[in-house]
Image (cartoon, rainbow, N blue to C red; front, side, top):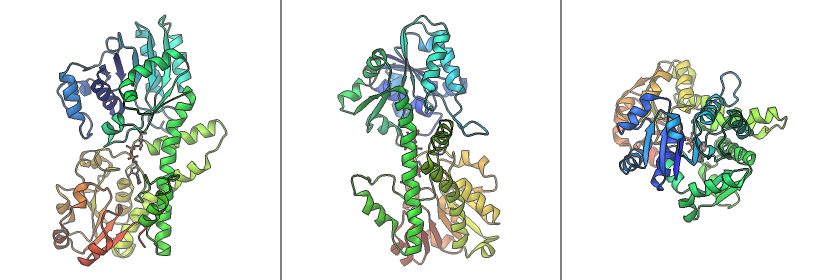
Length: 436
Ligand code: UGA
């Protein structure tokens, strides 16, 4: 089957490469000539473990190609995926659908065969209806069906998530749409991955509801962590204790500095806007968004407290280990590290930082921070060390060396990757999250 993927960003590129790996012929299309040039040269425009190898193998086999020419790319494709960005619209937080609609318009004008047009971009309820209207009004005489097929992959684990999904959600309104999508996902169907067919609107809402629920779970455990600190309990035990109840589930119950990334902050906000438009408030999600925003600066204050409070902290130096919103990505979008660094800077604290992949994108976002070439370079002369992202490299720090290099051995572990007793036995003052 020939598949066209319009938009070769994170979701488009990973999905396109995985579909090619399933045996389909895939053309990834992008307006950005420099991105397509990089891909032709075998260079990935994003950091994702395993992606370069997967793209390389499928390019070699001839199943995966790249182009900037949309009309040529979609010609002969039975499934045309729209996988372009839907950022928060400046000013009001609604999802900006201008890229999605522009692609729909171009596809409508260029369509030269019957095809299913699939929105993989995260789009608010009703977007599929609008895409359908645009295609209809483009004057195409070909048969088409508009389907919603949200993506649930996580950055850093994207290929595994795509190939072994918990479920595939397909929102289709007719048999043509359902039949083509069954064919697209046949290899996973054979793997017994559950495929859920729903209406298009349900499918669009499932994506937002899933992300909002996960964001809620994280925010819930973060607040429990704060309570644990006050009452002298251990949040990791609480997580285990509640997570082993099958109705709750153990995943996404790790307390930390708050969620970030390109999805949860944007999607929770967009869901609030949809709820507002339909006058059907989702107050739990409202509270989650607000609580998570406040948490990021609160984590900065936690580091300041570890330095002895605002008066003592002024003029001191903190080493920030980890800047990306989570490990195995270079993505800095809405990373808690940005607010933490800002809070420290506002309090007159000097910040040196190290991140294995994120420093290039981080530097312009935090001009006041000195980027260093290793965790130990950041730690040298530091009055406190704060672990913000749980990269493997920070789980295996040589703590003896850390203690020698730091001015004072204060470790603020915002991801709970160390055991308090072990670190304290080495002479550190150790502060973590929710382990009172
Ligand atoms: C998230 C969802 O997990 C994916 O299913 C979804 O497809 C994706 O958004 C999307 O909509 O495109 P992602 O943003 O890549 O994926 O990252 P997650 O692994 O979900 O982590 C999000 C944030 O939550 C990170 O800042 C992470 O550190 C934080 N987190 C996660 C916690 O603080 N605690 C946890 O227990 C889990």
